[in-house]
Image (cartoon, rainbow, N blue to C red):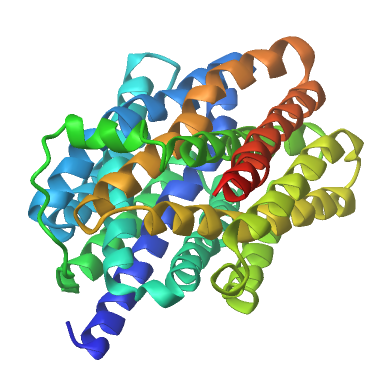
Length: 388
């Protein structure tokens, strides 16, 4: 595929992904809606976590499909489904089965779109600038967090939740149009079966510790995305202080320092980034003003900003040519488990022990992830080198 066409398609898919995530990230404000229609912290966790059941369950099928039939058609299916489902929230007025069904459908849409888009981008980007290319793709993803929730909060305050749901759904329609204009990248058709190929990747020695590390990191991110808006509002602080700080910081890090994981050994970037995330989570109990919320958001974003493209590049580095979609699917599955399924447990901890204690527990959990990563990629790797 000629370089100009690859650049064009990379740009279309990256921009389409940006708009899709404007829709997706707007739903980080859904806890406010749940609270307003009578839900408590535990129900917030249940509703938010329901998304993960289908976003995780669909991934083995999506990974199989995109490695056999290409990426583009499944990006289109995911973006159009997200558009339709987001509109249907207009008809929700209380916590009943309908809101859980809509979250389940959003999970399917997310699994189809994001797994396909992230894999398509890895098809377009040369291996020598893989972390940088994935970082730019991720930077546009994060940029959506400054648009979706920030404007969405204004929509809710000045108009209504119905206008908010209409507003956010239109972003996925834009994503559909942009991805429709893109072309399929070069990929090798996989001969593996739907389950054996996927679970061979998940449990192989090449991937399992990285996937576990990614899951643990995602628990930390999920605690911020799913609950931080309610925590801040409870302290009289607007949610935009996190989302805007997070977006700006991550974008700057990935644009200005995105080539660092392509220059320095990736594991040496990942570990300190994880430790910075741990520090930020343990700082949350000290938040008492907008300034302190911005500071904690900045520290968290500093760590996570470089960590995600580093870990994703480590995953793609280890994938064979015909299992790239499967590897990215496994990566997204571990990510979704951490963000969504752990929301159930985090919601119960927040309800019974308070948000500050919930974030302290999350920080300790991430510290355990740092220890696992250190053992695998520093201590154990050092022993192997000495033996060889």
